[in-house]
Image 1 (cartoon, rainbow, N blue to C red):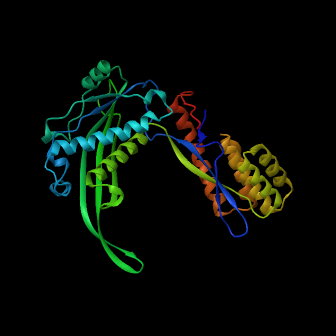
Image 2: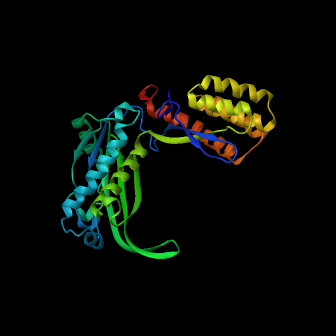
Length: 339
């Protein structure tokens, strides 16, 4: 099962140094969702159960937005949240999450909206009617947006400039048929600050972006996602490291691998450490995390630097996540979309 992919084949970025040059290779790693669905869940139903209540935005926020059209603002926020969520789900390696079903059943009992949950019968009926195995519900949200007068320092002068500060909090519930209570519940909180007029964005654009980001964050809770990461490739002053670095820039990774292997066996302690670290990165790009972990342990035993210690912890984390990813993807639903 593929757990990482390159953004562009073996794309490297050069970082300038004093006497040496190092490189950064950028690729994407598959991160597990925080919520793991039972194996029988194949089709998701995403439902809008937001209560029709004005208290979901306070009066100050309404004044800041310059509107009293609550339903219009409600639509702006909820639609942007769902767009962000769907953007995450359609890029998921779990194919069954790419096209969830959508439905809306707004709550009208605004006084008891915080306590109203779907019953077991309602969940079963919804799943049966929509040919789904689980119901993901946006139960409520609260938006606060303020216009603040902020002072920042530029060229030793205090400059006063207004900015928007938005905070969006939402509550989600996931239901399974034949379960009397929600399978999982999550409360998510996001914030966004934006200078007034910057980038041509007005206050409604700020709300739209905040809501979009919010939906994407919840998407990371329910489905595995690809996230960008980078790794350093050591070059240094040794000729073999420099030649290997040049080969990686040309795309000759097999030659670089052979050069690092030779140096790992015959170089000085520092050179062997750098070569083993580079080999560990090579194996990670090949999706061989066990070999990566073994090599980074050997490198740390020779010379433990902050970079190697950080990398060691990152690989340990990825190994711990591997079982969760395999369970969530269900062994072979990964979409191979190298680009």
